[in-house]
Image 1 (tube, rainbow, N blue to C red):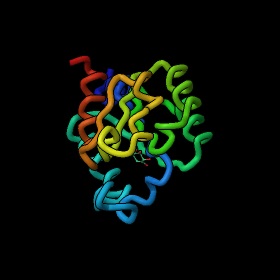
Image 2 (image 1 turned 120 degrees about the vertical axis):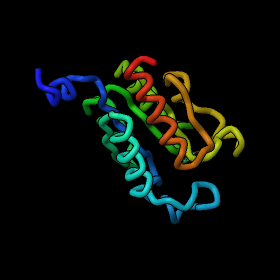
Image 3 (image 1 turned 180 degrees about the vertical axis):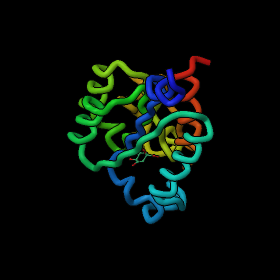
Length: 154
Ligand code: DQA
């Protein structure tokens, strides 16, 4: 079997979903969410992915329905998701994650446990492998490293 075929058949696909309002990163409350734009974060994810040998694809949506469709239909081995405000409201996204039965890492740029009371409740945490919250753009990079370890079982 060729090396490229082995790589293609290896379970190494990570899907990153950015939820509502994250398209505004860089302009949106930078004192809370940091100075980087979403495309800056996606580039950092792509370069780390090639360094650690996983395949990453990213998407952003402001729509709960589109996020659910992606969880149901996209092909991935591990899901990294920042559900943004849907974290605190969406039983539908939680149910889609449960039904997909894939490992999920929940990510937040800000520390949701240190902010308003309503942000402390996550409907996603109970169906996620783990949550990384409070490290700005590094939350995503830490999640990608955790995804790699889940994939390669170490
Ligand atoms: C967020 C935290 C959420 O409470 C908020 O609604 C967001 C972003 C974060 O990444 O810190 O939109 O998920």
